[in-house]
Image (tube, rainbow over all chains, first blue to last red; front, side, top):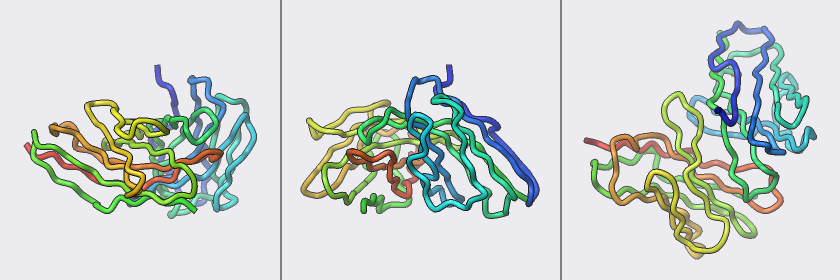
Length: 113
Length: 113
């Protein structure tokens, strides 16, 4: 059973399109995240939700909008996609607090052409 | 502000030899330190963490790491490298009250048969 699952795994789309990535965790965690990994493999947090409440919103364009319908789900919607949005997007979850292990999904490879 | 440094972009080691992947950190307060591994086209897998207590932490797949407060380091080690250990390794830093991890840039480990 996959602990953190995200779909789709691969996504190729044209500039200007709108796309969504869905994420679900079955670990019973209260906190969920979206991380972005760029072409140089650098990982940076985008958003964090705790009990459906947004608690971290890093400097991310307004075109990116997370939505957490419940504690087990955190979706990422991206409007007006740009070439620079091409990256791997990782969903993750943990219990709240810095000492808890964050568990990652397998990633969604987004290519904007 | 907190930061993590992985000074080596790449580490090459012969199969059967011991391996070390270096990590240093900077944070005010007590650090929570993590190691993750990423295989090609996969998500990040948790290896081990240091929260408190014994400075030597043992983790998955025979890996261990030693927390050194005076040198602000948390190097990942394994006594005998396997070809299957070849992957990208990330050191990450958390702290109390934080809802995110700060990642190092990653170190590519290549184990040569």
